[in-house]
Image (cartoon, rainbow, N blue to C red; front, side, top):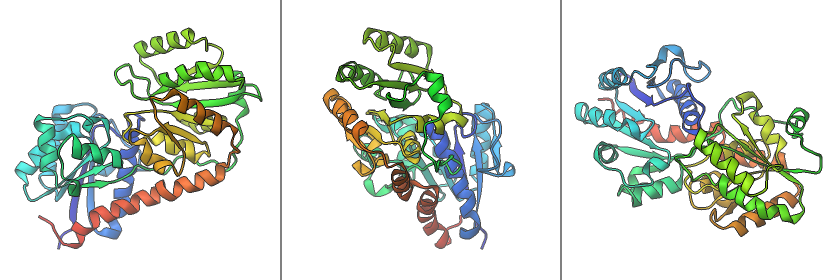
Length: 376
């Protein structure tokens, strides 16, 4: 009996560093690790990637198309026709999934749903690929709920498949504030540091960092010395909007927009902070919450989206109504007054979201078809 063959395709994996790309890298590495013990073969392709990182996937197994979209679609459809299972990493590649089921109706089609792309009803080819998929993987219970309510998908077809911490994320063992960052940002020893790391995009508006800035105007009156580091790449329009808002709130001395933070400094920024706050209300999951907790940093998040999954519904962090400023202020006060237990928080987060747990969950999903001998 020949080995079952699986093809995993993504928009991007190694060319950018967003949450979905981090998920894709972890998913690829998990598939690579499971090939030998489960007895299947896996191939990978990225539409916008120009190469791969061999820590996650062997070069010979990964095809990079460098943004050549038409070539990617044609080549991937032809290659997928020879595969027993096609896993689509984003709904925006719906056309490939539909063509796969048309050419190989007995093949298994899996679609991964990350969040915002399914939070409103979809139609056309995106609706069709959800209907034709043999299974849907939702990164959170909230995303699964939206697939049921907004897309009309049967709950039994959807598996909750939570995100993970990158297997190569630098886990600190000493939880001290880096002196070079304190110097860079002019932070005094008596100042509490509030931190947000996200993409600042004028077209999104659901991350909640603007709500946090508005709340800090009142927090400033509570005589707690603090600085708020709002980190991440911003588009021009959003950067201008936030700088105006910071000025209007009289927070020029408290709020620092750091811009893009290179990967080698991310862990140190989490260590610098006293609380990570991002009261989002449109997050599919939120890998940054895992990264913060991996560094022993307490987290405040919104209770209206997939953030609840990352915080294990309040077991790992503080969930608040992202539209309630008073709740946000109370949460900030409470968390900043509490004694930090960074090693304990790190350990508790890893029990749920380590890469080993992620790989084990993926094994449980793909093993039944392999054990059944379903090769087409």
